[in-house]
Length: 379
Image (cartoon, rainbow, N blue to C red; front, side, top):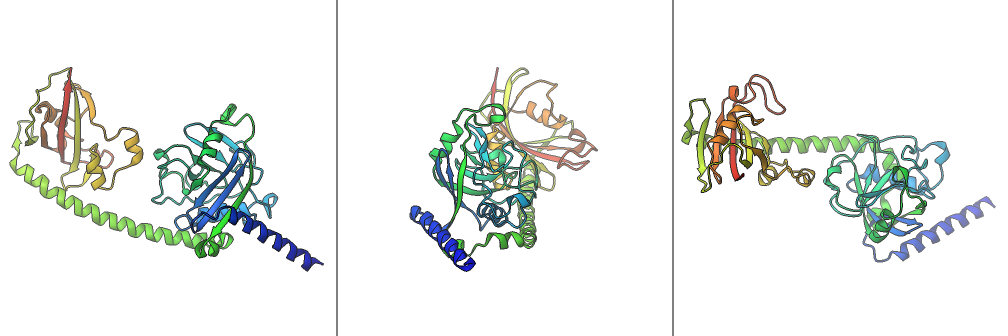
């Protein structure tokens, strides 16, 4: 009798799985999560190839076969019946907490899997956390690009259907803590497998191998870092050739700084009280870039960040010209030599820079080189 009952249950599960697959016959091969909510259905592709540990955790929770959940959650589809407890219009919707207050989880935490996947569009599925390596079961789905979250939260999926449902959830009325006044419920969270790769992805086994996966990931990250160092060394050598060329053409001023006009501007010479806008690239004397607000220079050196661009980091820096400007003495003197439109090379000896104290990436007693472009000057 037990065998017959088991066969019937398996048959029923297969029928339900096939039914779910058939409803989404238009999906390409891949692994997907179907969120059936009280507001409608969303479908997200899961990036199991790039974030295997995170996806394994999510899938095993959804299917009720996660080996590490607390006893109360064992053998149950974890997400079914859970609400979106935090909803913020023009930002994201957050769910996955059995306590419904942002404090709950499955009884364990795990690492971040930070890859080249970004929070760069609406519908990104990402892990919520309270800091590094504190992932559990909570997730969020973005309504807009949120680049400031890159590197802090693991992106592991993206909506391919139901972005309008995400929008409708983000628009509901909320109360204290951005919790919807009327619960938005995940009625079911179903996993859809299409194609050989997705069918072969075994969430509990992958989760069980997470230590080895993490180890291999770290090895790959170290190799990547070594390649980045080689690239930076190569760029520094190229920079040094150009800086040496400018230095040979430069004129040494009485203070000890050296100036070479790379490009003569046609604008006015600003006076004290004028507001000037500058682009600047700062280099150590060995050619290593330590700071720049020039977007192209940052992209070339691998230091560009979408979050920085969103915050205006690559805009020209703006300052009122006066003797008390909060700048190192050598840079200040160089700016006073410039006309609008000038692009100059400036060598600054360490005593007119940051002196004998280290400053961030700048070692103590470092001579510095800058390429400075004065864009505008206004009253």
